[in-house]
Length: 124
Image (cartoon, rainbow, N blue to C red; front, side, top):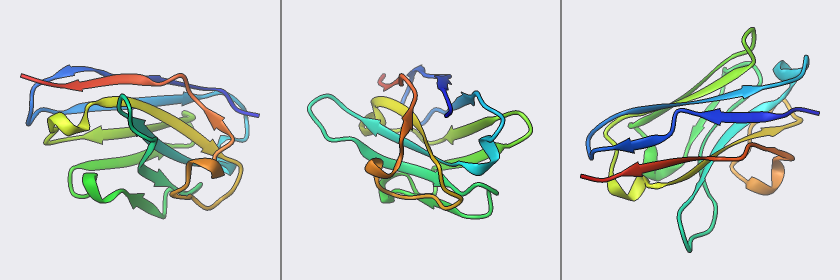
């Protein structure tokens, strides 16, 4: 089992950057694929990015391709999401998720463990 805690959210102006971090407990972090999802008010949870256990495979949702970068450090039990060129439509609660599999997935239902979320607001 793994517990996840996100940090790094906040208020940023359009065009700005934020870096989200997710800290995971547990000795077997390296056996989990990790993902980031987001949910805006009144909207369904949306896939943002995912990374395989080794970091060798990366996946991104179409709205964030070319702007966001996911990475992980298995020694530190962390997974980060670097967000650049932020837009107002990126405003949402961002969730870190873990999947007990070496392979990442686009689907929220494939992830068994979730953090509490961190708010990202992009506004001038």
